[in-house]
Length: 160
Image 1 (tube, helix red, strand yellow):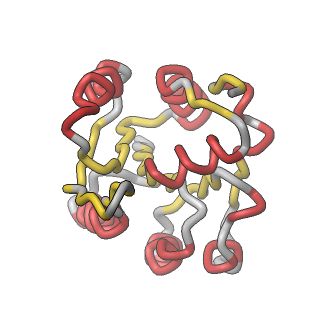
Image 2 (cartoon, rainbow, N blue to C red):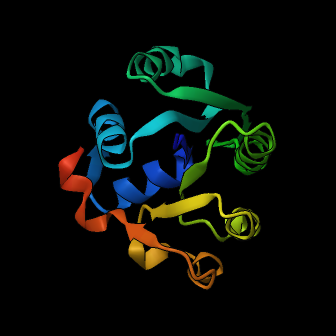
């Protein structure tokens, strides 16, 4: 049986949608992912900001499995890059046979090596890039299917 896991770079998705003028309805987005890709588990990698506990509870009630990264404040900016956590979880799930194929939601070229690894092991279904104009060449040159969300946001987002 085909088991699909989805791994979402939460910051990349959020920022790209916002820059394109959309606010994601995370409940609709999860429904869309489940319907379109028959996803078993949908992991959302996100920085942990204590003041956003209610939002995290909402995301969990929508069915996301949250993976947090400790954040730090640098001036007025909050930093909490989850790239290493996403790579580690995906590779760990690959080796424990937690999926037959997976989908990455990111446009970040830092995941190029992960895409290569998954492709070599016939385990990646596609990459969903949040913004066609900002999708890294380090993903585009991997000869895998990339679905750009630019023209799909209307299905699971609201205009800001």
